[in-house]
Length: 280
Image 1: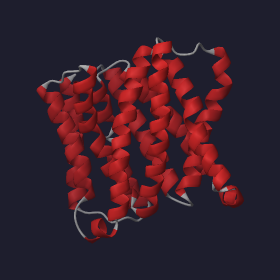
Image 2 (image 1 turned 135 degrees about the horizontal axis):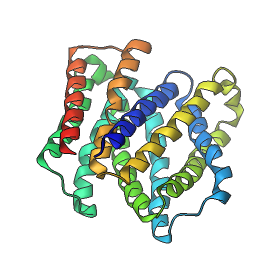
Image 3 (image 1 turned 90 degrees about the vertical axis):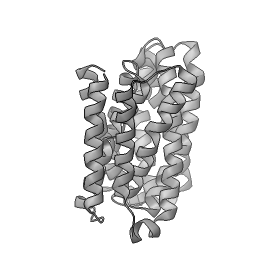
């Protein structure tokens, strides 16, 4: 992994934590996330006539990713309804890297060095350690269950997009078509279902959701581009450093409980970053 790709994925991690915090911090997460994903679609739809579509062999992966993202969006909102950002986000993101590494080795033929495997283990262990035991964990068990299932969908759509972007011929063509189509099913379904409550998204509620949509587009576009440049498991694991920032936002900005265990988890994530760079 080159230094440029390394920096790009770290920037994507910061943007990803930011838009998740904007979805979590106020109002109904379903409504906020609907605006977030529709913002991405609105940004990309006008560009489609000016760019070539992905190669034919990329479309099955793109459609599979769109379908999986519907499940991901739903599970993420359920998790945020029942649990803290600093708990549910680390669980969802922490489960994804080992799943991606295992599935990529089985189905994509990727091999990983020992330092890379240690890096993935460190990042994953750090994200899970950020959760910690205690009364909060027991009280938010339902939210953490949704978060764990969300982690499975993250692993699945990551692999789909990695295969799709490599088959597309042009990575940016795949990214733009994915974002144009991805937000429509979930976003339009939620807005139709909640059409009588849309006044709750009026200013200032609408503004943060739109900003979250811009963050979401930038974050995932950078990651999909990076997956065309470096091994999928390494990109996925490095992106999960966003849990450190999400845990900080949750505990410092949203008033969620903190502790030494979460600091230890953050240290493990940092160790994973260093190992990832060495593995490159």
